Image (tube, rainbow over the protein chains, first blue to last red):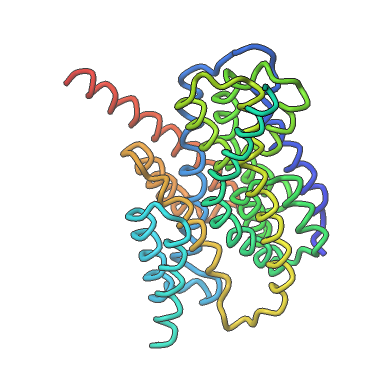
Length: 105
Length: 238
């Protein structure tokens, strides 16, 4: 039981809907200023890398010590994702390297 | 006549949605597993999936919760991940702005990366589509993707509790996020934003959970927009 979880679920649901409804909900064909559009374009690549970098470099499972298996798996995922542009292949590459190195180690 | 074109647009959308369904299933599975590991009950996990319908932000919220960031920082981080959808909404408004309000409401609910990408691509290649046909196409894409996302989450939540710790599932989340982000790094500006995000987040890691991330994201968005502007100028000059 996590305290406040229902509040989080509800507010995240409402907030996300309002973001999606923002322009579709308005009557007419108003558009965002170009600078705002330009900034919004980068939100996923601005938030996600910063969130996962510490998880990859200093994983809680090893007490914060860098772990060769995790670093290699992350690199494999990144390279596979860049090359194939395919989410599934990238995940499989990371998982294969991670468990492969776990078996060897 | 109008119904038959809408019908065929719907089924065309459904066909175009098939490849995405293959990706969304495992992603939903993973969210279900991670949510269960984070301590959410089945009803909480499913409510989140049905109300939010945005996997990356749901995983962000869970990660920040597990780190002890608290409800409000988790909410801010997850909403920041979803800000890009304002751009999707703005991009679809010229095509769907004249559809009835209830349809635009439903479209908004189902507006995620895949439906947005498919819809805009289709509307651009076929400018003659009527507004009802465009709406039908959009729902066609969502019709397959949405149930598979929800079904994947249920299965993940059900099996999540039975997975032993030795499987080191803690690493499933960073791996999935990396796989989500890597294909997005299409331009120099995207790479600049990602690198800025990583550097600032690592430098500010000692701040309370979530705070450093929001500052890093703000810097990264500016970096991305700046590099895009510079690249454009160079192209114009050359």
